[in-house]
Image 1 (tube, one colour):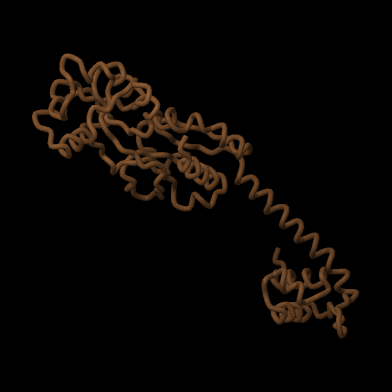
Image 2 (tube, helix red, strand yellow; image 1 turned 45 degrees about the horizontal axis):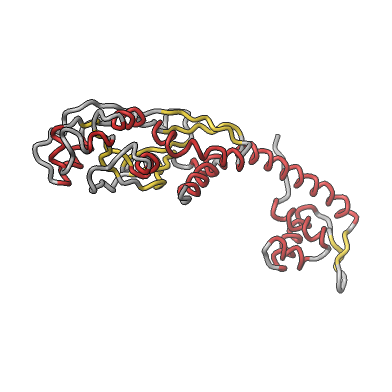
Length: 295
């Protein structure tokens, strides 16, 4: 059914002026000029065919028609405001589906989660772990943290954690029967790979290593497993040093060489427009704030 309603802007101007009994105060509240309030009220009066204010020398008085209209307008605005707040609250709450790599979740996120829960008790995190690349356009995932160069198409990417990537291994390999003194010594050891052989190829090329077959060694897509294998002395893995500080500090892992790749990082990834959802925006802002901490 068609409804002929007065302009909302005019109703807002009338409600503010009637509540304050002042065009000047109404203009200040609505961040417009006094002339704009007067224009809107005059337009509303023409639309309704009645006078709404008695304009005296130093004050305004409501007409009988205005006194009848005012509570209806105020109640309507209150209802609209309450409905909008309910919708906004609903969008700030509920479940948030997050896709993470297991290594990042275990080494960086897990011990921080209690801080998110304390700050956003209305958001239920559903954490999904995968070593593959999430298809945010087709899946139910709201936001992801991905590892790479940050050049993925059709998604928004924000730098979360820069990370220097270098070889790590257990201390038994460092000074064992085939000690690691220079990159060429890697030819005597097993290289542990992530998804393919490319990362080791790049590191070895950058340091000018020769005689090392970068295409040998097992592929272990779960970094947690790969790092544990390195820790156990089964080979060397390339990994982000910032997420291994405790293991390096305690000597469980060692870094036999100084050179590190610095073009890879962890990124917050989400579909275009996802930050319009308050729960996605809240999680993204929280991640960035946590990344600025040093613990």
